[in-house]
Image (tube, rainbow, N blue to C red; front, side, top):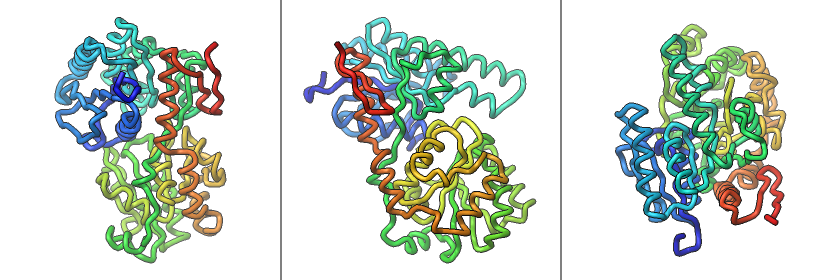
Length: 404
């Protein structure tokens, strides 16, 4: 173990958000950084770049993004075996089934416990975003990889009750093996602005307009087409309002066409990918954040980030967003993911701003529930339980049961 008495953790992820933006990569970076404050973390990613990290967080470029997924999968297994053979790994912490399955095989050979964070059903997400025989073959392969990876895991962490139920029903994982530990926001980085007007001017946003923001990958299940349809109604009732859509993806062309068809050219801005260093500013500048997800929303890191920035959030009652807002302000949940219910919900709130929580209330909810320190403490407890060294934690209630 490290000199500080912590654990030697091997964490296998997808990539790093500075290299490949996305919720999984943001979570992986954040939780690895938090764990490295008390432990030594070896993070295996698929990248040719070397991100800057603390000394106790060691990045290993285990795979080349240009290679086939099979070669990347084998490369992760080889790198894991090399590190494990040094005798310095206490636990394997897996985040992405294709890159985690090989290291899990090596961990099992050496009696190293495996803890997996389930970020969502990879093959089910693939099914939604494609079609055709070739795509069906890819999704079938994805499912077989997932099943093998999950058979090798001792304990699972999920970010929401919704994903606990999906993991249990799709893969037959017993409920007692699944711990619910919600995600978090970097509360030091995502803070309310002291001067919102200055931020709006810096971003070239109309100063007097009501600004509604969403940041999504531009794919179907994120609900952006439904949000645009809803915005037709909203913008008629509230002409001095603008919708900002941040993100990139294959749906951009269709979104541009819909914006033109709906006559929303002056009412909607497609911002493209928002660079990481600008994201906090957009949260600070907006009046309302909207999450229009239609399916498979595991937690919603962006929801926690927005709240931490003091920005009220409205969301469809899908996955983790339902759980976040139900425990805060249930009236901020749309009645359904439909365009009609989104239009009704946004119009209701914009018509009566007193229904919105204050920026201070949003910030306080994030500080109480969704910090990386809180996540790191609970994850470490799960590790010690998997190693048979600590207490058993019910991550939802915080109730501990000591080993007899």
